[in-house]
Length: 93
Image (cartoon, rainbow, N blue to C red; front, side, top):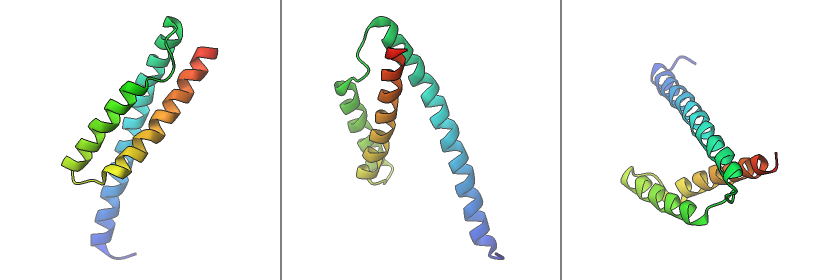
C-alpha cells in the first residue's frame, strides 16, 4: 500500500486500539478488585441499579461525543456482563 494518507489514518486507529486495550485492562483490574470485595463482603455480583445508572451516563456521554448511544450501550452491556461473570466466579472461589 502506498497511500500515505491511508497509512496515517491506520496508524492513528492502531494507536487508539492500543489505548482502548490498555484502558480495558485497567478497568478489569479494578472490577476484579470490586468482585473480590463483594465476595468477601457477601454482596451480590450484580447491581442492576448501578448498571442502569452507568448505561444512562454512558449514553449521554455518547450523545455529547456524537457517538451512537445504542452502540455505546451495547459495548457497556458486553463489559458489564463479563464483569458480572468474573464477580460470580470470585464469589465461588
